[in-house]
Image 1 (cartoon, rainbow, N blue to C red):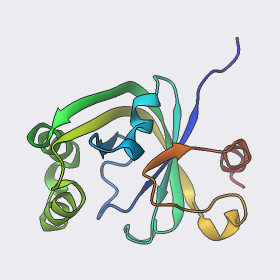
Image 2 (tube, helix red, strand yellow; image 1 turned 90 degrees about the horizontal axis):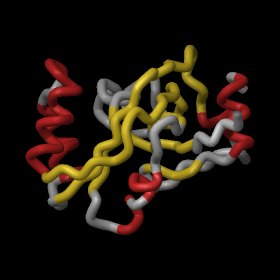
Image 3 (cartoon, rainbow, N blue to C red; image 1 turned 60 degrees about the horizontal axis):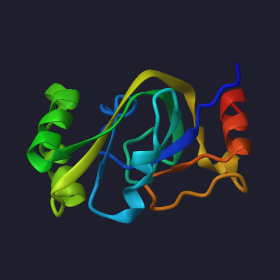
Image 4 (cartoon, rainbow, N blue to C red; image 1 turned 30 degrees about the vertical axis):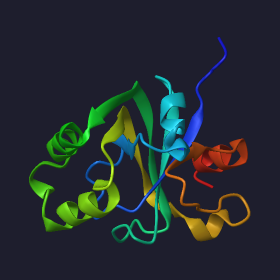
Length: 155
């Protein structure tokens, strides 16, 4: 049977990597987050950490996950409760500031549940993917097959 999974790139710069590989979170209020509605069970998500993320993960792909459930909408309080439950005891002032700056202006959010996180060891740095991947501000976008092949082979 043919594999019909789609491949996605999550681009994020969280203060810690506690929720990476567990959930995708985005506002639902703007069109450029609509890719969250296109994610299906079984899709593969590659996790790229921007220069704003924690070391040593900065500017690297740190792993991949499988979509467990498609997007569900939450209000702000419901989303924050969900994210805090994932972060657990590591929820601190860094996360408070991140949540306020990233999500504070929105009312409705998508959350996509993930499973089977596989960490890349070592992380795959951006510098060896020049010409194949260029980070953009888009939180979730489809992954080109050339990049998928490179990530799956570990480059």
